[in-house]
Image (cartoon, rainbow, N blue to C red; front, side):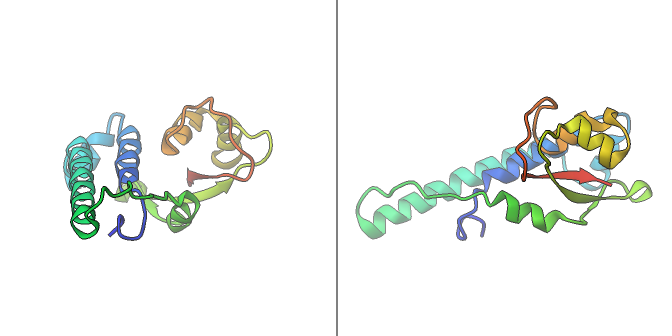
Length: 149
């Protein structure tokens, strides 16, 4: 379905890798594995299915057009996707939190955002991992990043 509407399905694999970082720690993996399959198996299956879908679409395009098809244009729609995450529950039932979007201000860093929104700059690394970025990444004013509250 994602391919049909133009989304890049490999972005799910990227999202799953980000989840794997969040699962690190003394209780993270154990809590996650209680209800979910091993995350790296899921990532491998996603990548394999994406290859199959690409091959099928390319083959069908060649049969219908009898020419070599151009690679499909894929869109990520990061801001639209992130807007669907607002308020989404996150974490174990006994410590349930929610995702929220934060719009980056000029001069913001992950440390400043963590201090402002989470009360401590110590959370900057987790905040960066949640967004799939290194903690020292420069942030673009107006960009939307995910936080957990």
